[in-house]
Length: 137
Image (tube, rainbow, N blue to C red; front, top):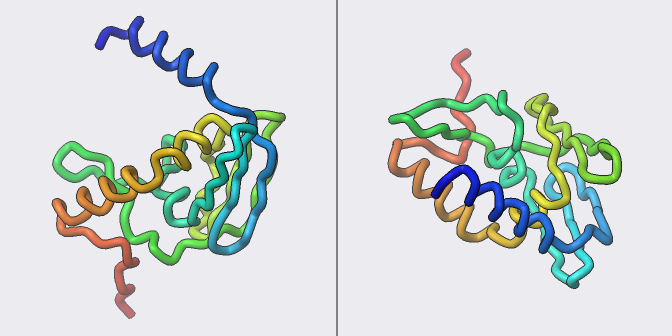
């Protein structure tokens, strides 16, 4: 797919995305978002953390794939609105640089099950776990 086709597809997707009607933070475990088309999604802290849009998401590169692992028990500490288009979420692992736009939240909610399934497959493929590694004393 050419860059132009990707850009056009991206514009169509953004234009078709319904507007956010409700954002509810349920710390430490989840966020709930509701959109003008009636769709409502509950997104877990772990799911939001592993799909953070930030460039510095504490990513490990395994076999050329970027993989975030060990975040099963991550929590949400707070959320800060960013303009009228998104939110910055502060996680208890101190990650806070990703801005989740409402379009991106809609994408995550609409594709939650397939994204999580693919994530778990990637972890298994590389022998990694959703559970945090034990710290040596």
